[in-house]
Image (cartoon, rainbow, N blue to C red; front, side, top):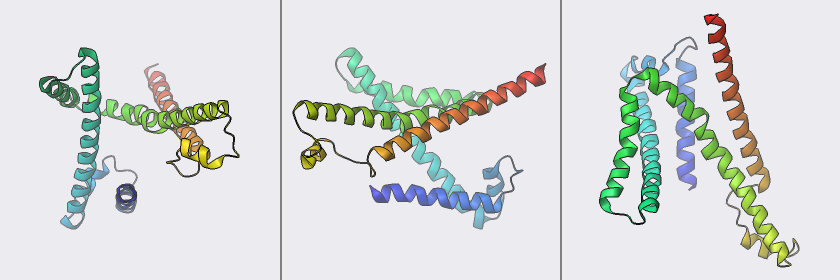
Length: 199
């Protein structure tokens, strides 16, 4: 788990270092600019970009495929190989069709998915779920007469995967709310600018 978490962080830091040192802030497409440079720059950047896109697509398609499969199986009460294949096909086909319609539609959808669903699904929802579950478990333990004095029993009943306890989970929830709020402010400011320009 540690290795799997450290490798993406290292790649992100390398990417941030490359993009901030070699690309001017005025360049609109930094990836295309880096790919147009010599092979010493373009080959590592191409490999890094391909790896980032590939791992994102693979993870997203696997997650959405399982989600669609669960919906189909729960709806029809059974799972056949043809229904599983159909769910996986729909998972790949829908974003592919949207991407083929052009960047004017796909890029705003991509920005929206990064701004809202990602922050809510991967940041806010897990943190709130952990807080609610821990509160329920503590309530059930209190009803059984188990208090904080019985610390080993409480810790065995409420496993702590995230270090730092509730403080870390609350910080994660607050950061996620902050990301959603900042994305909303940016979207509203862009809408206001367009409205003012149109008037």
